[in-house]
Image (tube, rainbow, N blue to C red; front, side, top):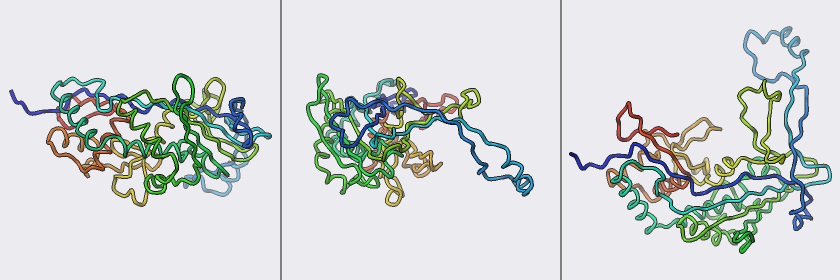
Length: 352
């Protein structure tokens, strides 16, 4: 019987950054100190008449047909969220748990592989710790990347991060989000006061040295009555829904999906080819960016998560330090790996 180490056919890791849904509130900028009394932002429905603006097929480009089509009303019912006329500021609030046990699989059907994995992760932690990764996660809290479209065009964005214990705040950090560049997570962001300390708290949570729960609150001054942007629900049968756009709500309040918050926080990958011009992307096994329809870590480049992990564990070929950071960031993200039985190849996984 061969002693050669092979990959586990079942392997799973739970996420270690666990954000809640973000709930939206409305109020006035000068009343931020009393924001606990602000009202949740509700989602409204409106019906509008749209115009034809999609690209036409060649057979439909006849002027007569186009004029006839434009005469037909394109009626739509959509959800919308906007600040009230007397409110100029959006408040976005969520909590973030930072969990220990990075690299410890929640499922693994191979004891030798599990032992090698734990030893490899432990070696990384002893040599590098979680400081680099934690500093990047902290930067994405400070710069308000989790606000997505709500950050664009804002007059002011103030982010407050509180460390919570026993239901109360024991430590607070305040950031001017618009002074921090989301295109870089390095020199400029590291100059933000309190960022290093916040990173140390997150690193401690990832290392399992203590319970870490953060409450994140962002105030976005956009202007009275301006539209804001909660998450949009993916509804395949829009006809049954009766609306062409449905916004996400929590208890009747407009909200942002926890998955979208998590995606923003893990947008720390600047170690892929082309990052100098494109900036950070979310940590994904293949470096996939769905909005661009592209994967920046192709298996042929041998820079994808699976190739790096297999070389590190099975061939004892430790990747460069920055790629070690990437592998650990994928484990923190959480991933479930199942090797396809029909192919029987030790290096192939199916992502679920």
